[in-house]
Length: 182
Ligand code: 5GP
Image (cartoon, rainbow, N blue to C red; front, top):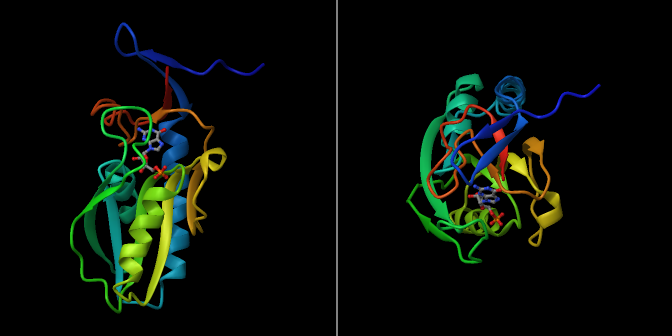
């Protein structure tokens, strides 16, 4: 018999239902790190770019599994504000000189694909040697903008996810697991 997912009542109105455990996340992140290390074994020009804020925890774990030299940089992108619906506008802040470098953009979730398309477009204008995309989660059912994902953690249903760095109105980032907000 299948176990019922664990439920964590957080406030009188909000419950987080566990979707992916902390152990499963760590296993998958370790595998992604190995794969990335092998793919980038011949470069010394790798820049890992963390898309804040949602990807901070994922990036921190991922880079500890990457065994090739790399620089770590940060940009901030936001489209959700304090709600659970994308605003449809993406605001990107941060400047990184990527010209001639192999860049690996690390995202938390690819949903419609708008944010990562905008980020990729901005970086490709600066002539990197290569650009690859790594995302912890993707929601294929929501895709509106075509995106090639090079490294994927998990495919998730089209629900509102929190935990492991990913928030709702600034809350729940500290959870070590991923869950659905109900
Ligand atoms: P997209 O531009 O692909 O539609 O949305 C990507 C961004 O929206 C993600 O980087 C993330 O910040 C936010 N997002 C998408 N789905 C979710 C979700 O289920 N939960 C949270 N907290 N943010 C999400």
